[in-house]
Image 1 (tube, rainbow, N blue to C red):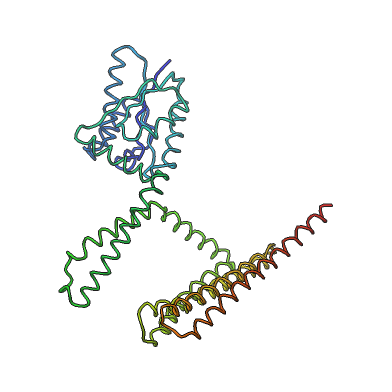
Image 2 (cartoon, rainbow, N blue to C red):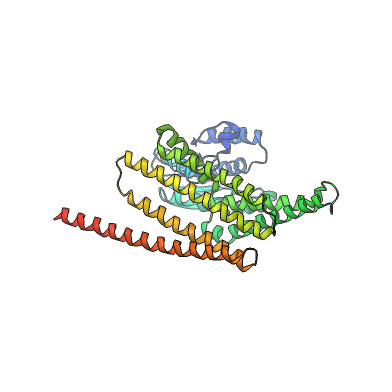
Length: 375
């Protein structure tokens, strides 16, 4: 029975740098691959690990053991994709002969990811690490950081809060620096006033992107847009209309408050009051077009959309009324505006109650109809 020495290049340096595709099977092929990679990148740890595997192969051969050697390559997209490729190549290698066991020889950086893939297919006799001494700490630290960024529990407890803190701090510092420059407290565009804030914003944004996986979210969003545009659905048009209404609302609300001089905070509250109606208009347009899309597609449960619209209207009444009442409490407006705000809040509560009762009635009616049909 033959043992197989396995060397794994998880991020496919052999393919990307040396143009050698895995699996690489046999002493001569592995030796040629190691020479080619180290010629391209003398500091690559994967080449050094493969030379270590070749040396161990010679040692076992000298002891009279029957061994074979191979190198498995993954993909530059390290993660599920690369591990799937590694598993497929392992199956190819193990299908060549009836191997008794495996010996893993690696640089030690990613054994936690590689070992389960091998153990699920063949027993492992032992693991041998080949690490260039001056790179050991750097290599280990790099993969600890990468591993931490992929740990969902650690991301939610540490990386996202730190990212939010750095992003907020950097933006506040940046706004303050710009303000000081505008009012003349700081002469000219001095980089020393901006560099720290910019670095903080960049690091914070990176942590937020990693924490919420924004790259995947944005990619899915563009895929959805492409899908909807190809199908020429009304729902795709609804997104465009909604975004357009929001943008118009931003400009229109700004124009409305720019004509009324007053305290800055009062202008902000007034702006939010105006803008909230535009937001509701965007929501109403999107949901109305969505209902039309469902009707044309002969889909059911359209009544839920109308329930959502009325409930959103109730929320808008309450928010608008509350903003006006806050302005009165802060003595920015008269009692008449406060009274109108209270009226809007009462209307919002009433609309919410009526909407809930109507929704409950139709839900019960639908259930009763379904039961009668079942009988």
